[in-house]
Length: 208
Image (cartoon, rainbow, N blue to C red):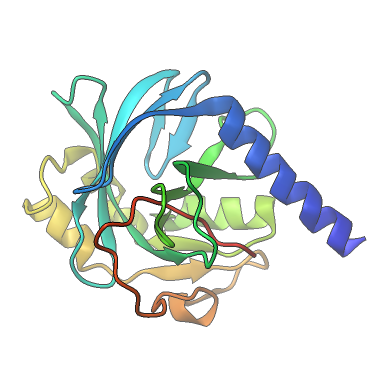
């Protein structure tokens, strides 16, 4: 039964990715990808209505990534937030977004973002209180950032302003389905195997 349930969750997540997100354009330099969502989606600290949005890496240095989401014209930064490295041994040839299971009635919450051809992606860290809710709903650990930094998600305009730097320097934990909080490296592989990234064009998701 556990295996069947796990398979159902995988298919559920894959179906949501297909139904809600359509990659339109990608750029290997900063992983810029344009997604068109046909229904509202949730990101850390912000809900996006149906529409077209630009995702890109604002900071690719260090063990964590800074992700920025823009409107379709890239004239306004809608959110800036941190993620942890994500690894998948079998890269996809397409842009990939996957969703966490959430409680009924709310928009699906984006869990992971992978760029085409890369074995490396980003798993998003949600504010602690929301991460705990998602962990319980999905029965999977969820990376978390301090809830008191949630306001910085909308106020950060660049990857180097004070709000972004506060998030980048914040401790990232992992919220467990049972309510426990643990160190992120106890449940996630955050130091992925060494492999050249230059020339790759793929983003992948956890394959668990």
